[in-house]
Amino acid sequence: MHARRQPPERDGDEPDGAANTVQVNVSRLRKALGAVAGALQAAPGGYRLAVAPEAVDLARFERLAERGHALRGTDPAAAAQVLTEALTLWRGEPLADLGGSADGMRARLEARRLAAAADLVDAELSRGRHAAVLPDLEELVRRHPLDEGLVARLMTALYRSGRQADALAAYAAATARLDEELGVEPGGELRALHQQVLRQELPGPDLPGPDLPGPNLPGPNPRPNPPDPP
Image 1: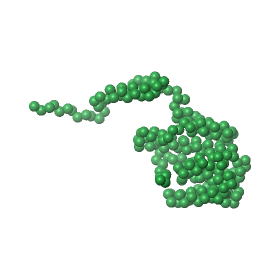
Image 2: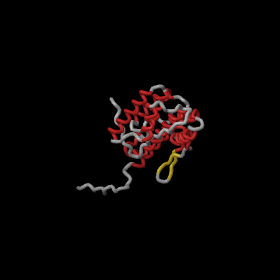
Image 3: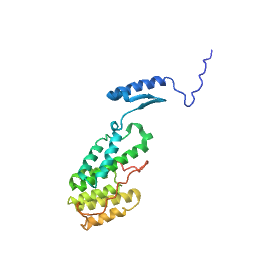
């Protein structure tokens, strides 16, 4: 006696046990959400998370980052406070559990974080906190070694901290990396800053000077940075 052959599963067919699996996962999610479990609501075709924007870290970050950016020129101390609050909302790599399927969104989120970090540096430099901001700047340049805007900020902070030689060394290192990685020379703004540092003509924070170039924000598919040394 032959067993009856089951018809092949078609695209879009619901796998066996799918409904039960969804219910189990929804129950687990509600347990994880705790006090806001009621925000997970049934909707046509599935479920939706109905929460106020301020309950979502990304929405809070965007609001704070925009406010901090606007305050840089008028109240750098307030801008630094707001931007610091925005950046403390980040906890590691965004969407890390989604793998390659979220590369584009992950790159855009990382770009927003980098822009906020650059704004914070600008606010601190405007306050004259050159030495205090150096550790964070050095880490940013280490992670984004081809970003001329960050290199310019690092050179400025070093020079205004009385470290002209180190500022020139930062420029030389950036020049070598750009040539090795991309086969290009530094842009005009960075070259002009190098000349100011070389001639000891870079204005102080209370004097007018050239605007620092903005960070080179990565696009949906940024060129990967060189791996960190072991």
